[in-house]
Image (cartoon, rainbow, N blue to C red; front, side, top):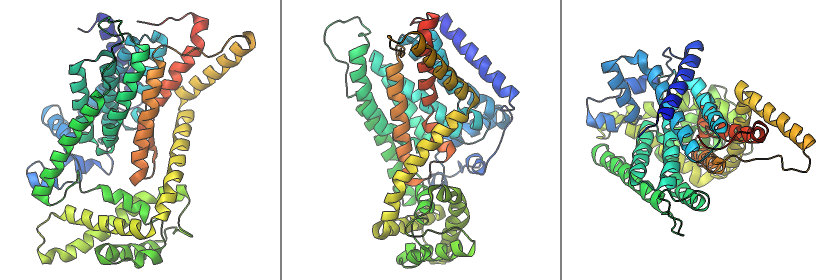
Length: 460
């Protein structure tokens, strides 16, 4: 049962979040280019829903909100979801005996992080998916620590819900399997058995794999349903589109014109449009990473997609029974496969460059955040003072629970970034969501450095 102290912590986090959102104008609805595709999701027809470029999770949330309190309440509801995510994080860190100041610092870093600051007021999936991702991660931490079957089930349901809201969180499936095992090993060595058993009995190491397998089966069932009803075995008719805007920038227009088949026809027209519209084109196999990233969105939505749509409209007279979006997606996928099969070297060169760009972007965003910058400066100053005053003592004091948080934060960022750069540039809103735990790791460590001076102790 929830303690009174836990309720007070939730209330305080909600008060902080609401105050910051109100002062900064983040309780007013903002829309983006993606908003109409979520608001106007085709619930009236199963086949239209299955051929939509959006997964049903977030549109269902919006429809329920619209029918009850109105879409103007979306920012407030997304804020409360984020507060819930931050609250379960601080409760788990305190349960792992982290000192209260360090746990609060970690929680506040997530509360005011870049994803929350930029997207809480927007009708898009960035903010709610990030909050659900935090809840999934904390659920995994709690499940491995306690061994609770109910928590494992809840974590699996949350994982599936997160993917239903934003398929970019598919990385959670392998992440649950791998990090579930890693946390079980970690907790066996550091955390006492919750039942007080002092024997050498190990926590189960495979539960994360079981959860991942169940979630995967559920997604495969959805994909099979789409295959039966709309003729495509995939989560959505969308993923090829993002990758295509990367691939066409890794080869020259002459190479694109040399491709054949359905993908070749699209590639040839894309090459013509890229030259006509004055885009910077690759020389010797590629473009600078920043140039590719800057052009990616416009090439995606204003070059490749409309050309593919025009080609499929020209073929509509043939009477194809597959939905229009599916046929467009299939054509773009054919072009992608031809580029990768015959000229994949540019893409392979792009992957490490994108990873480097992602790391650089994350570090820059953290350093430019005023709260995080102040935290870094405080930690550095305290470290210098401690080294000066106590040269014979180690200046580093890791808080209890910090190793588990670090394990989760680093692997979460790594798995998510790996999935991102396979198909898209690591744009700020993508990379910031991947790095959502890293400021918390840094902040709690800074408090760990300061803690011995202030006499802070572990626990609640």
